[in-house]
Image 1 (cartoon, helix red, strand yellow):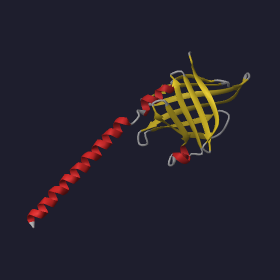
Image 2 (cartoon, one colour):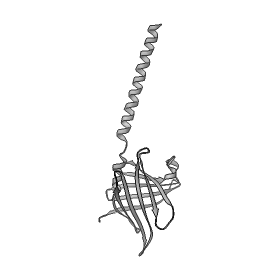
Image 3 (cartoon, helix red, strand yellow):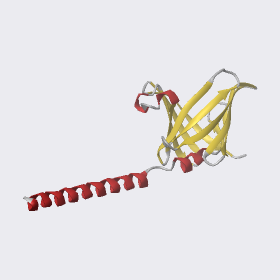
Image 4 (cartoon, helix red, strand yellow):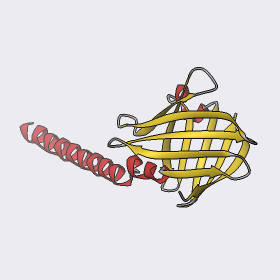
Length: 170
């Protein structure tokens, strides 16, 4: 009886150690394939202009892993809208949270940014962070090169509008 119990105990320990090793390997592999959001967000740094419109943006580094920026939309010679924003990395969710305030509208606008691949970044409203798949609106930014982004804005899971954004040299 003791021999049977000892054999079962040894088998159980072997199974548990294999499961623990498999879990550790899987976690390590996941950590290795996880995208470095802080490094990837640096792609946004610079001066940008949306082709076909008069929207310009400037994004600068701020602090250790943050970004700050300014965006302006012009119609002819007058400024139609302008706002300032700041991005901060949240390591608990491995995403950037951005807060912007507009000079022309009241309220604070919160969104969440993250890279889903080395060249694709998504943005959703902050209130949809608990279920991004059901976000009311989604922006997908595809970095075609270091100087060009294709931005697709979707409403209710259907493409609404697309812009080409180009880096300007200042």
